[in-house]
Amino acid sequence: MLYKLKSKAAGDLILLEPQGKQLLTLIGKRPEAQGIIAPEEMLDAMEALRQAIAKQEADQAQAQADAKAQGQPAPRFEDIGLRQRCKPFMDMLARCHKAGQPIVWGVP
Image (tube, rainbow, N blue to C red; front, side, top):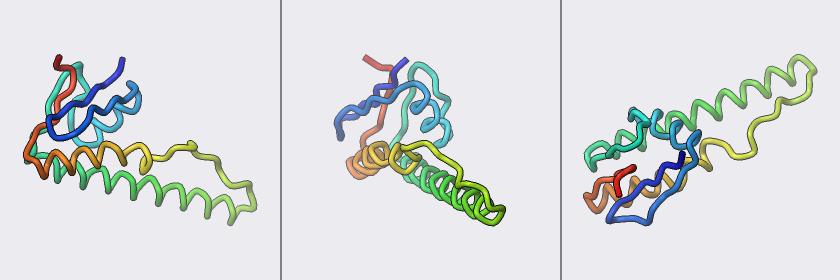
């Protein structure tokens, strides 16, 4: 399944199912077949994403420090982190919030 996020204020954003579910869940939305993000929800959504990014980066830094302290090789993480995955979505949220336009998905 793909998530195609659409708005009148921004170009479409297409997300694969795992990433779409992850991002929608992080902002407190149920990743169903269709939904809406209202402009008044967007600032909170962007803050939730910022907090999730900070947590992931802190957890990874801690895991690296722990491995180094124990003389073990540094752990490997996904090549594309949450910061990179969130960037297009956060740009869309900011643009749509500024224009006062909702973001929808699963709607023709």
